Image 1: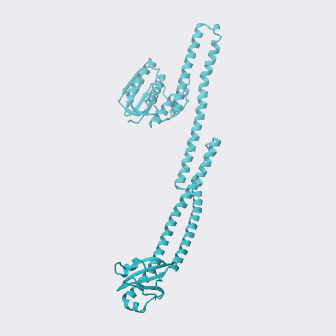
Image 2: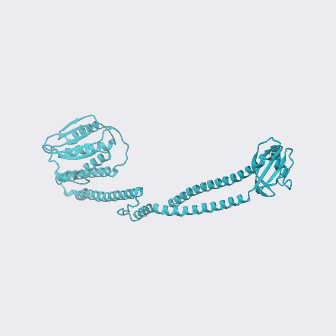
Image 3: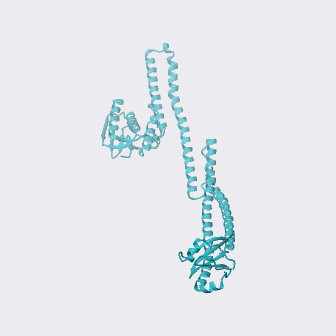
Length: 432
C-alpha cells in the first residue's frame, strides 16, 4: 500500500468517524426531542383527567385532543373507550390501577401500530393515554435517510479531498523519489531537487540536496584518491621492474652493482609497503571504531622510544604531561608516529626534536628547513609533497593520515613556522 493511499484512507477514516458521530448525535437529539414532546402532551392529557377523575368516569371519556383514552377501574375492568379492550390491559396497568405502582410511560403496539402509552393512577383506578407515533416515526425515518446520505456524501468528499491533499503534500517526496531513482540509474549525483513547499518539506529538500552534494564530493574524492594512488604506486613499481630487468643480466654486473641494485629493491619494497599501509589507513576513513580510554602520554612516550631507534642520529627531547583521552588506540598511535617520523626525516643538523604534551595538545618541533607558507595548508592533503620533500623517501600520506585521525576524534592539526626556524606541528585531541 502506497503512502499516498494510506494518507487518503486515514483522512477518510477520520472524517467518517467524525461524520458518523455527528450524525448519531443529531439523530438521538432529535429523537429525544420528538419523544419528549409526545410524552409532555400525554402527561398533560393525563393531568387533566387526574384533576377531575369523576367527570372522566361519568363521561366515559374515549378521546382527548385526538389521543385515545381508556379508563381502568381498581379491579382491572376497562371503563372506556366505546370499544372496550381497544388498548390492551396487562399486569403493569392493573398494578397502577390497584395503587401498587406509580405511573409509567412506554412504547406499545396496538393493532400493529406504534403508540406511546402513559398509565397514571386515579382514585379508584387508572387512566391510559396513548399517542400514535406514526408521524414521529416517519420524521425519524426521513432524518435517518438524510443523515445517511449526508454522511456518505461527506465521506466521499473527504476521500476525494484527501487524495488531492495527499497528492499535493507528497509531490515533493515523489520528486525526491524520482531524483533518487534517476541517480541510482545514472550514477550521477550532480542533480538537485527544488527546495519548495516550505516547512518540513523544504527542509527535506535541502537535506536531500546536502546529501547529494556530500555524495558528489565523496565520489570525486574517491576518484582522485584512486587516480593518485595509481600514480604513486606506478613509480616504485616501474623502478622495481627496471631493477629486476637489470638483475636478470647479473653476470654482467660486478658485486658492488648487484649490492646497490638489491639495496634499491629493498628500499622500493619498503616504500611500497608504507604506501599500501597508508592507503589502507586512509581507506578506513572515519569508520566508527570502538573508542576506549587512552593514556596519550604513554602512547607518545612509546612512539618517542621507537623514533630513537629509527633515527639514531637525531636527539629527542620529550616533556609529557599525563593526558587521558577517549580514542581508537591504534589510530592515535599511527598519527603520533607519523608526526615523529616526519620530524625525524627533517632533523639533520644535530639539534633535537622537541616533543611536548600539555593541556591536551601534542606539539612536535624540528629544526629543519621548515615548511614554506604556501605549503602549510597543503601538507595535510593526500599525496602532496612540497618541492623540498620530493628528494626524500615517502608517499605523501603521513600527515594526511594525521589529519584524518584528528578529525575522526573531533580534534585538529596545524602546521606552523617554529620560532628560530624549523617546523612546528600541533595535534589537539579532546580530553576525556
